[in-house]
Length: 373
Image 1 (cartoon, rainbow, N blue to C red):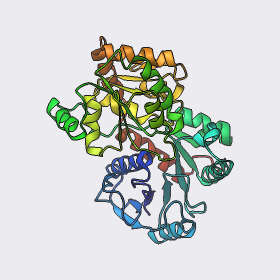
Image 2: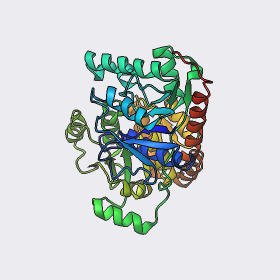
Image 3: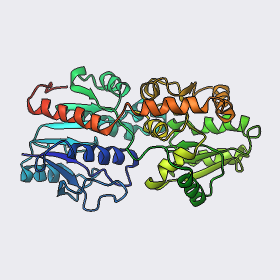
């Protein structure tokens, strides 16, 4: 009777969740005996987000967005004789027919309602309510997310278990030769600061650009490189850069191949993350693991992720962000911050997260977790 881990979100449509799924799946596969662990997969999972090749796969062509999953996934679970089902996404079958664990990353549509329609917020709330109700345990990726779940859905605290994220082992300082190849491939300057993430409004990129406009001329020829998944619904960031006259000092790189990310982080003189809210803040830990000094928002979840290894600033204050940028470009304490970051990143690992997740599976199967919200 296998544990079935739903890996249908290991696709390019889910850049962040897909990385969680692929990393956790590989780590779980190293802990659970063959035959006791299976993956529920889409017919064509991402080749970029590699899943463990030696784990049995249950193919399901119903996507998490499809109504068909409500009967197809339970059918696949019955055919597999599943002992437990773990959904890595809140759009899931709500009557899976077996003990269930689900993962929650953040509640952004409820915390920042101004960025979403009333219909979007209602669907998000309803589907999260269903997911957390039918799950015997909910995994939260940070203590901040756990607190949000308790406050918004009135869940019992012992039903929510915090299992933090980690940098993939390939995120490590790269050699000057590897960095040079990456820079040439992406036509990057010798000196650059880096932001990596999406362009969604809560990422606070508009304010970052406004702060950069205050210092860019004084710190030339350093460039600000903005990379990561680009959501076409929010073109305002590039419009803002043009309005501020930052075309020469700012580079929009867009999505970056996974194999280039460690060198991109490693080559950065500093990494900046001005987000107003995160479920965890994985790019901060990845940057630290690659030896990049980190500047980030002074918000609880990033304090939780970065500890004392980052230079924090108030993300709502332009002058605070600008001061942090100037200090980073000056670079007087860059080595110290890089060393702190490497030590902090080493405190997170996917093996540890998988061990914590496996312990939750065992508690659910032993019925030692609350059955109701």
